[in-house]
Image (cartoon, rainbow, N blue to C red):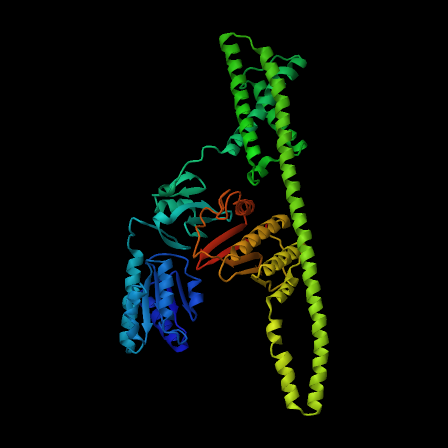
Length: 580
């Protein structure tokens, strides 16, 4: 059970908190959390779950805004239709309005009640909430509970769960949320057997499966490549090396000689790839263009065809007596040359992609540095102008003070000083907060995005409270992520009614946290598919950026990205912990 209290009056806050703690102790109830808030926004920021295990005690009158409590209740009800809400108020005349606000409160407790009656009403609400917490749930709800986390969600809104790159954690994807919590897929599957485990790292909701992707080219490539490479070396040694050494061909792979050749070929294959410095694991992180995907499909078919043909010819010769030695030798030589060409093509493709990415990042850095320099020049001009005006201002004030002319002093204040504070509070001076960023490339990137947002009349807030340097991720990968997230935030915010983008780069112990949030025109968006390749709400030929971000994050086991979208605010939190 989770308990929330919203009360801005300190004495009433203490009264409710003390009463609840007393009753919890008396009934031996241990809630998973019990929090007291004085501001609605602070409370709403902590509402992440759904279910009748959440109990809210809300004051209707907050800071003399009598409807505020009802508005908070409505927002809670929008997020969690199953939550239990109790109003604690002195304004019983507003109780009928809860129907208009569609709140459906559990109870209304008058603050003017006697201490005994007040405690009794609180006790009734707590016991009811505790009984609901332990009841079995309806068939249309997904429920998970452990000593570390507790979730209740409409089952139809869940897409899938996957293991997180961070140890002992899973990520829940729904139509509107992406939530990470401490658990294992095995624990979740035991409590919710309606989910389908299609892979050891995934649980899916079969009700939301649209289609099956049977064209995973990379899986076929990774499966065929090592098998074909080993086969080529094995046959090459058997067909050409052993006869040259005066030994016959090895037909039985389970003989002593055959096993020695297999072991030798294994290390030979590793040495071959190491010597040529080939690493195809990065194919999983790269975005393959359409042309290369077609080439990969052809490569898979040719590798499969080679294995099928060479094995068939061997069968017909040794089992049916049909001679095919010369043909197999020719096929082996031809395919060995072809295979070398395939490896070279893949290596060249990956290196070109890396150079393209580096060149693009370098171009962006130069552009950001140029914007940064122009912005600094403009600020310098303003400082010079301010210094000149400040000198004249001091002269005018000195004369007014010497002559004791209050009218002159008042005139100087009204004409110059009165509006100066507003000018100095202008958002453009926030650029100076980047002084705590130690990485020059990152500082240049953020400055460029800051100026880009300013050019589009977007309020861009920056918070870097202490000196920090990127340590939890390679700088190039981190720059790529920040650049994509900032560009997306600026683009989406430009269409909002009140465009703003806020970023923060924080450090707590060894953990580094990068936060970016922006306003959007929609009330909310479906975040379950935005990280898929080619999926975007911005039109065709889009939907690559966030896919790239997720691929990079997945390559770091100590990094995670949490995404939420609600109340026309899109928020992403990237956390990183440096590895030893």
